[in-house]
Length: 223
Image (cartoon, rainbow, N blue to C red; front, side, top):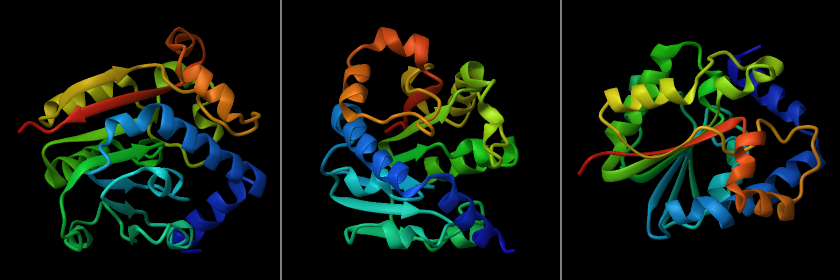
């Protein structure tokens, strides 16, 4: 089985149709209540590893791009999303990208990488393709607060904490604008999803310190 076929089958089996619908609703609430204010509506936005396009379809932006190795992404993307199917770790394939970005969004992606060297390559890519003053926004399982459940998904490989990621971003030249070590719960899988509960949760940051298993980082490229 080819890698692309494996990935397609793995993610199509992970969430049933009802769970996928619930995820879309929750993403809309997360964007409305939190993410949109960090992404200007006149921005050029790239989503890396956006899979089923829950983020990129619902964010408001002037231009929207998605990079994903999964060929299914094209099926889920709205007409205004430019889908680029490529391996972002392949330097030659990166040359197909002809634009730069104001915002790059990455959610639940780094844990699938094989090693720290791949993580460095992804962040170097982001630094290269961000416009000066542009930002990278990261939502990522924080191993420091989710170690018990981190490997419950077969494709999770690289454990990362907010402190390690903060250090690496600084080293590569990024400026940390926002760092929230405990933000969202670790996973929505197997839990009832309610946009109303999520909106309430986002308005009560003190609860994040009890339930948060994922970090949020916003880091910018100097002008």
